[in-house]
Image 1: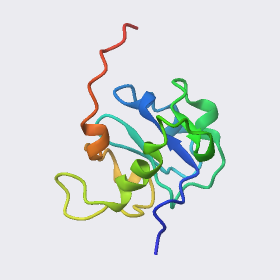
Image 2 (image 1 turned 120 degrees about the vertical axis):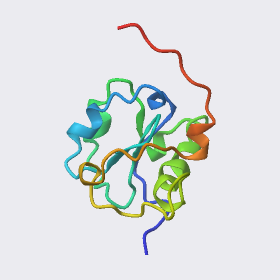
Image 3 (image 1 turned 180 degrees about the horizontal axis):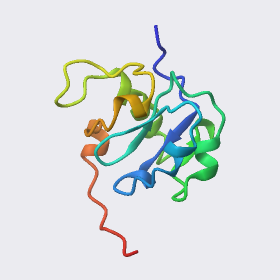
Length: 123
């Protein structure tokens, strides 16, 4: 049975409404999934390599023990994306076997969905 808190790397609030996706391309095991407003690391598929953290241009990814007090809530939230029934779905995602195969999920956890929208950045 998968453990809820095996997450080693965690995607935090800096990803919300930004979703740079450079981490998805760099991940050797394809364990970073796309919600509607944020990305999520599957704790049961992550191999703890750190490639995602190194490439993330918005510095949204931290090792779980390096999370600030404000970002600690994302440890459980990243896992909840896979272990709880998300809006519009009839069962948890679990271990889908890769983000590319599954495709965009298009919904977020209640925590992310309730966050205020960030204004678009000029660029």
